[in-house]
Image (cartoon, rainbow, N blue to C red):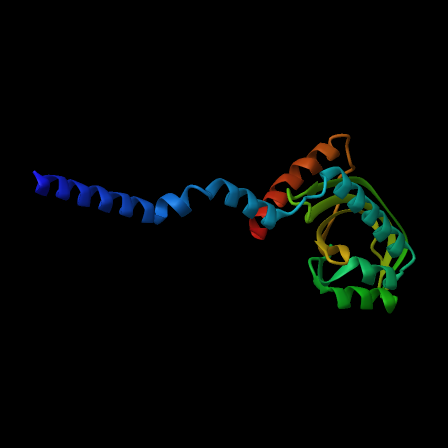
Length: 201
């Protein structure tokens, strides 16, 4: 009888010991909700409101127009990121240095430029945005008139120094704008922001 009690006591003690040492019970489940919240906060921080980002980007679009209208490369240098790339209306690809150089030299000379139909989409973190706007300009390229209406898509990135334009593409508008253009612009922005969000992951 004593042997039975002794065996039961040993089994019970061993069982308690194994349960107390089980790492799965102590680490994987008990702290999982808190860690998930902490990790999410650490990874994303406090995102800016989309309305605030939209206002910032719309102001920058206006600033770009003002700088181009004055052929002010110093202002453009502050707005364009060092990695800025432009796909121009003729399909050529230009770096920031090349874009600023052609304006400084007078090869590209703006007489006037205005933007309207500005539509902005932001990523959920508030660190990236895409703007699509219609530009109406009077400009010459090596003495040849090259103005008119152009749809400009710009990708913006929030850096430690503020918002910077990192990429842009200009596409000539071949048909008169209609009242549905704003809706078309909004739809065109959706896949662009989705792709950008995926690329940032």
